[in-house]
Figure 1 (cartoon, one colour):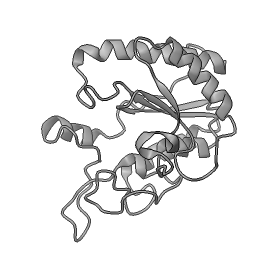
Figure 2 (figure 1 turned 90 degrees about the vertical axis):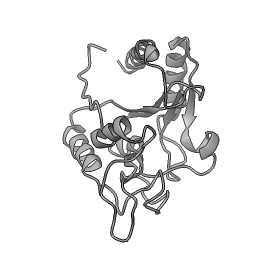
Figure 3 (figure 1 turned 180 degrees about the horizontal axis):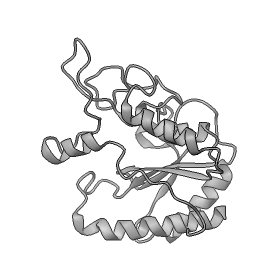
Length: 209
């Protein structure tokens, strides 16, 4: 891992995160003011990127509301602009961390290309990484073949945006667990999960290098 330069965005949705700490623990959008004619605020940032945009709820009150147009939100636009500014500097891998589900997803989540050109290699890499990421067992694969997204897929994800920018290895990493605690993972688990993530990253970067 020390052979790479890492660019880290510690919190892509600071306003939404603050709201989860003060008002609604399960809030999943940003804090955009309600659109005219609506009482509901916020846009789901992981539905607001250009790749496959439009596949998702158009209702502003929906938990996964996609927004009016791609990159309509300052958070997604800032991330997209930053990625575009560095992508030509030999960016090899991009990861987006979420919770929960204990799954590593590969492009593409929307109904675009049937598979990523490096999909077989990506899955081999993940198989090796997840084998070492004990005690938790991770699933891996395409979003649109997984459980509630089966045969549907989703649009506007950051992972697909990274892939469409030409980054060879782009993933969405859903942290533990499988549903026992869900979004309310006990704080005592933080270090365990952190070590698990570092183990997985170490194995993944070893494949790339």
